[in-house]
Length: 131
Image (cartoon, rainbow, N blue to C red; front, side, top):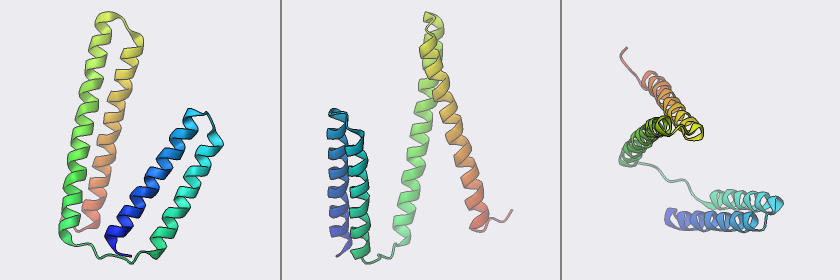
């Protein structure tokens, strides 16, 4: 099995898991959802055991690093701005729920910034920072 076939099989298994969970949610059957997730994970492990390891080049690592940094930046800024917007809008209308939601979004963005800073510091030390 090559990498392209593995990706197709992995995508199909993911769609199968999503379909089973969606159907279980519609009919309010929690056990069916858990069973579908468990069987899907087993199929993923079986597919991965048949797959030969692929050597990843530096370009893929660089692209994934840039993509994750862009995703982090976009999501953090969106959460922070939406949180501030919710707080200021709620204070004008005396809406406590919207203000609480804004505070939660602001705290989540602060948590993301903290996790990013800690992981950046760790990997910077691990991969040879001069400091």
